Amino acid sequence: MNQVNAPAGTGDEEEDLNRAIDELRGVLHEGEEAAGKPEPTPDFAVGEGAAPDFTLGAASDDTDAAGSGVIMGIPVDVQIVLGSTEMQVSELMSLRKGATVALDRRIGEPVDVVVNGRKIARGEITVLESDSSRFGIRLTEIISNSKAS
Image (spheres, rainbow, N blue to C red):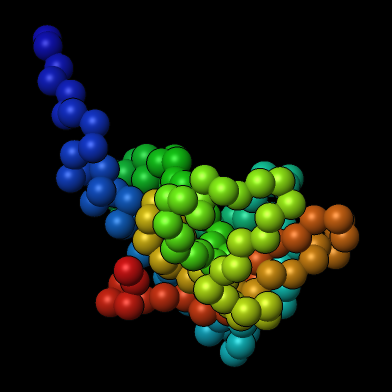
């Protein structure tokens, strides 16, 4: 029997990603509600030890469970955006080692957590208690679908 695979970048992948992001937001919101406030500074960062355990609620049937497993296995690009700036090509070409580029944010302002190009949260830069030579992000705000850009 021949199988036809959908081309990469189809709407199904986008739909799976949207569901995964929504599920992650739900898990994070449940944690905030249970504690009555945001969780204390977590001591983990991307690539450090085991990832946090974001378990889903019980699936209604085996198909839902299998679908959730597929969704949870989708790799995503996570970026922490400290700031940005605009400059002309001539300014960019004149940059040399030691040059300072001014960003559009001030020290202490929240940074954006962006997943696959979508802002899903904001947070504060923090030093990890387990390794003071590394930093992480403490989430301070989860951005709803209607606000996400």
